[in-house]
Image 1 (tube, rainbow, N blue to C red):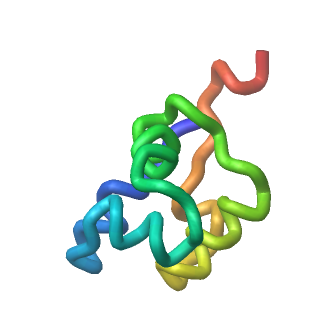
Image 2: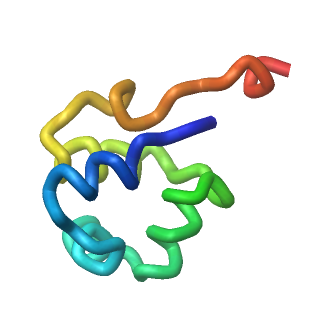
Length: 68
């Protein structure tokens, strides 16, 4: 699964630490989600979408390999 977290953060001029604090996780966890090393729970995905004011589908997109 790919995501646009880095782009969305840049639009708001937020650091990973800023965003992590807003959704209640560590900066290290935020980094793992942003770099696609960790797939967030539904709750975290919804919190991220809420923080950015966008639908979840604009932040997270499935890739063809996710269907195999």
